[in-house]
Image (cartoon, rainbow, N blue to C red):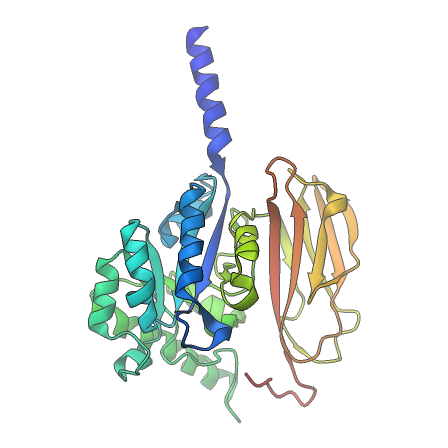
Length: 353
């Protein structure tokens, strides 16, 4: 009887502190002197880290988190990863200083062309070696930070695929050679991806990271892993606290239809997925695009519920739908799932940045 009670206590403790979700934070610059759209001030970055520290968050290596979730393992509650795109100087001289003091790991995604060219605001190869010594892991961000989904003028499908494959391979080779490491992770420039990119990255045995928001969990697409961008209003403490406390839906059979669309021709196109109901009330599930709530159709299906909606008739640009529901068990925590579409102009040309 005593042994039985001990086992039950152990099971309770594991379930009480176990989790199948993590939040991944995406930063670029940590500076007051860089573009606001991709920057967070050093002061606010310190507040982010203090919140994580004061509230007992587990800041773990990115690859460890993703590998555990892919293998259906449990994580500690309040698990977070910290990432930086582009390898700007402020990552080493502002962010890494604070992270090293806490012995917290982080990941930096590098585009080798900028580092090779010694661009003013980018880390050099020697500085990236220092980043590694301070607890950083290096990932690939493509060779030249191009719009990888876009064909060049008059470029055939075969030529496009060869160009992109060589771009990804070149970045991998240079980074691994210069830093004497192996690359296992990739971040899409601008968060843009297509089926060919995902297929190619899978052939490299990469985990691939996007920029649509949401928690990552057991049922995530590990070739389009969500991250929470941290800049402008999204980085304010209220929004930061909401995002690091998010949870991952148990989701399957995601059907986005076409992921690259033409503006104002989207009427009657749908987005759907199957969702397992747990720890949230179905009537509190809501999906939004640019703050506008979308009408949902819900159909019970083999222990799951199918969620379906019409896509908004978007203009051109990167477009996202965010679906959320408040947790029943965890106070002030939300389940969060997001998906991305790329919408071209009516003349079939790409939007400008």
